[in-house]
Length: 279
Ligand SMILES: Nc1ncnc2c1ncn2[C@@H]1O[C@H](COP(=O)(O)OP(=O)(O)OP(=O)(O)O)[C@@H](O)[C@H]1O
Ligand SMILES: [Mg+2]
Picture 1 (cartoon, rainbow, N blue to C red):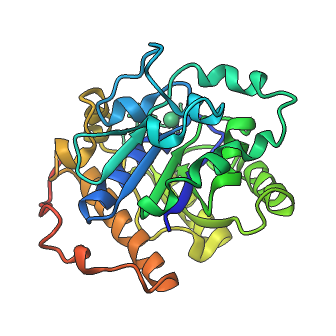
Picture 2: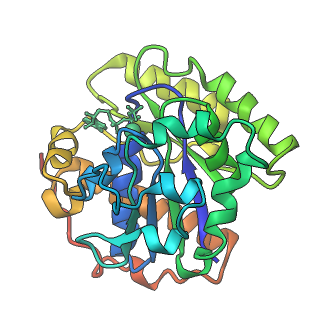
């Protein structure tokens, strides 16, 4: 049964989409069957895997799935990477919140829609918009766990309390089993003292919930998006790529410990592209 991971932080520009796309792609390289759901009207995760969202009538997106207009399997599309599928997002999503006002069980729409395909995947990632509105609430209701990217910058922890409160409220009502997958520090600049201070603070507060892997600030990670490619297809030798492959290993190792059924064979280093020290 696929594990549903919502990638959430209501702060904008902290690396949610970059993390979703590159973690999903790295896991699919490790032979995991991965579905990426772009749940942000900006559609950046879709572009990030080379699919340009549009508003054509027959371009089925996560909006149509959420509104119950098509089954999710109709909206699933292939990407350039084996085992990595996408449900695209587009700006129709921006109206969903209002359109669903008054709808019955509106927070559980995505969860209900995903039931049909959960068993076809090992991991289902939901790239959330930078809000805690109905889209994110739907993602948190559908999710088994939450992955929180945290930018190693000023005010990194700002808003985290509010996010944890929201997760607590969702647990009390809509999704009692919701767990934290982990917090990942992004855009880390090892030259800057502040980055290290923030890392210490976050690790002191959240302990084991913080991934050991830290994602460095790396220009290749921002470049690859404009080429519509995950970093593994753009520059496998970059530090950004090495970091996301490490994060994928960490996610798999943690889940292997929790669910011994998941195979770790594909983690043998000969399966991954061999990263060298690079940019
Ligand atoms: N590790 C990194 N190194 C360099 N640039 C990065 C890194 N991570 C993300 N970026 C860049 O920072 C910007 C914001 O990243 P991203 O889109 O992943 O954040 P987000 O949290 O999804 O944003 P939003 O809240 O708007 O959805 C993008 O231009 C992206 O290319
Ligand atoms: Mg984003």
